[in-house]
Length: 398
Image 1 (cartoon, rainbow, N blue to C red):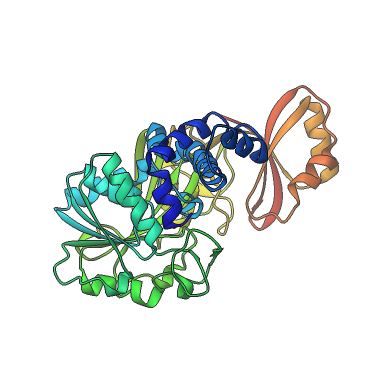
Image 2 (image 1 turned 120 degrees about the horizontal axis):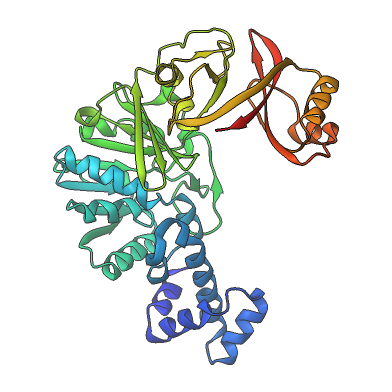
């Protein structure tokens, strides 16, 4: 979408086209465009309205009912912070005393919107003209006063910024600027926009700085003395956040969101859990716990231990309700043998099996075929190592 198409969508005809397109998103694209043209809309408006209507359908999972009032870009929607995560971050900024926030690389503005709703004055900046225009439009629709600029983050004066938030673009063109089309995903922080060597220096310019990063960020690259938080939503690790300067509270934090409730586990990120025997229960930590290196702290909650020093499954003799991972009651632990495992599952009349693995190179789908299950009962199968040896764990979730 370009600026002319955006202007067309914001016109009276554009509003009518969007309303009509919303009724046609289930049809094949050519048929839907033909139907819009039959209602008197030009081909370009029909196409962009249909694309926008489909983006709105996809955006409901992130933006809820607000999605049907807002405008989006494909790449922007993919990178947008989930509202629950953005609201939690905004609340933390507000609690830290932040009253003015400069959002550098605001994208579609999920974080800027959450900060404004938390009572923070926001200056939102994006290098792409279309994206900047969209966040300005969306803020108006939502009744929020957000000052929006189209600029390179590196050119924004920061001497008077109360706090800074930066979400460097990880979808860029060859020039490195955020775009709404012809983009590619990048994994090297040096190719982020703005580039990592600038982002990592941002806390020296604005002490109150928070960074949104990819969950797989190399932790050795982080700003000095920052707090690293890994965030998951209903079991899916969605982002990392670096809290810098006065915003840092602990070395490592796992933020685990289950439904509307947030749970936090904190620690040094350097402790090693004790190693011991298997137990009556085995716990599979949430990805945010594992990536934040807080497995030892998680094991403490369970009075647990690792079966192998390099594997994150936690064994315990206690059944403990915890939001930080899944619990399984152990039926049997055996040295891995396909023949023996197949026999054990058949004896239990297992016909449906959930297969998880940590520290195993086995192909899950090939194993599923090789097991040739034909029973009626469900089971969970965990492939892992205990004391360096491969084992199969037959269990059921609790």
